[in-house]
Image 1 (cartoon, rainbow, N blue to C red):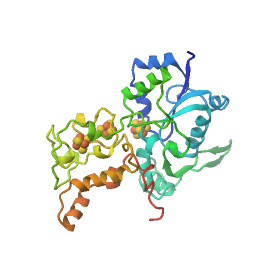
Image 2: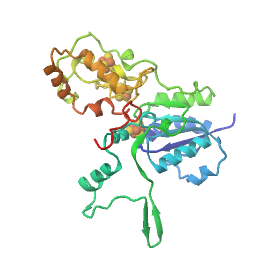
Image 3: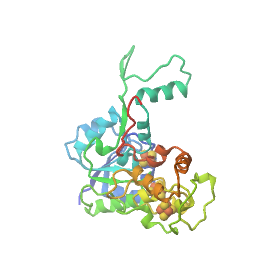
Image 4: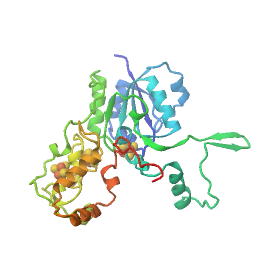
Length: 320
Ligand code: SF4
Ligand code: SF4
Ligand code: SF4
């Protein structure tokens, strides 16, 4: 069988998804055995024009990590789409918007620039210099990508064949994809490479159907090791999160933060989790409901930490 052509790309990304590929350790050699890597900006110095000069559908699989938040990322997503037979949204940012999409809770680029370059700058910036898409210098005109107001998941920009969630995706699932590529046995188009059911369905911690009267942040309580964390008052997104991660956080006695996105059949992970919390919280009157709401620090960041772009809300209404 001829070697596959594989591209790896990072858009609005922290780099963790690329590190997860490196975490396959010696299995990376197995990847090299079945595939020639034609683009991997973090590791190999390819240029965009190398990709542009390829015929369409010349790349077999593109692992695209990171969300889309500027014009360069959108351009390269569309370029790689044209050149690839299959696009895999790799990691929570590409699948759902991820952490970068929490920026959708602002009014957009002007507010973000004000924060980053004036209120909390890394350099002295009293003259309020902001990034510009075009800047004239003696040598000519410099260009920067346009920074968008709204962060998008990959499938909101181009068609995507497969989704591999996680922040970052776990090594065993990455290897499962590599194995499927090697055997030419990828799942049906549209598949999420993880479990169908929720993390709670897999979790071995004891559930006693107890109601809670107080919500704790993880640092405020030492949980009993065998008991469901949510039933101890710690917000664990297990009821609203797809299983398949190997219960990575739960096994470290930490609550799930939702990086595998919603399970099959659930559109809005945050709304599903809000409903799970409301159903377990023991409240009798409006005063107690208000107290419960107050106890949830940063509700949007807690319930939509990874899924803002693909939630029903998608973003804050501008101007509010
Ligand atoms: S999914 Fe997580 S590890 Fe991957 S780029 Fe996004 S923030 Fe980083
Ligand atoms: S809420 Fe969390 S701790 Fe409780 S069963 Fe679900 S995954 Fe496990
Ligand atoms: S337990 Fe939740 S947050 Fe942790 S890796 Fe699994 S899905 Fe992601």
